[in-house]
Image 1 (cartoon, rainbow, N blue to C red):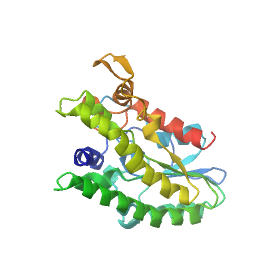
Image 2 (cartoon, rainbow, N blue to C red):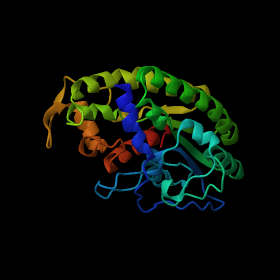
Image 3 (cartoon, rainbow, N blue to C red):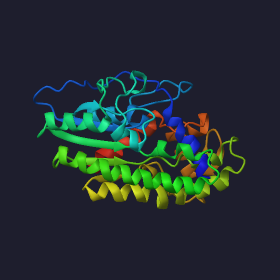
Length: 287
């Protein structure tokens, strides 16, 4: 189960299909600045075989909160790469993202935060999904995943205090991911899909998300449980009529609507998914 989840989360390394930027990366003196870090969720990636969609959640948040977005996220990034790997290929950046100029995401973020001290309106971080990818071929995927989560915690423990020091008292928000494996319930790619869907609930709630939440809270950051926001913890005994799959558990129907997993076996959010994530971030920050 964990190995399969890791393989699918590895799809975050794909080259993004971008949408037109809705925010400039320029920072006029009066503007409040929003710094976005992370992986393909933050860049707004969507699979190439999916219908054209709207902007990613970071761009929606920036527009609705009247913030100037500096999106430093890089598709495919792991928690280690966020703080240790310099540069990001142009194809892996979000729309309108600045050239990292050979810096790590963390270094670039610190520079932006210090340059605009007193004008930072928000910092968001979404990272960790790609850390699980190497566990797919592992002989013992559960042990591999346990180590991956430990690595994510260690990297966040090294990254977040640096961000907090540079951001001052500006709000920092950490995010997790939808439980896309609920979509295995209806996917022919998974022979034991219903079992995988059931197991994924505790995996996300008690294993992965609990670890992320703990690290963000240590630096006074808010944690947005995207799994919960996208229906991940709802009872699988509650059903709804889905136009494509008939009567299925309500949490499964939500994942099918909010991610590309059911239709394309791709973990990334649909436009409706990005809207849901943006709403959760705005609610967490009181906007």
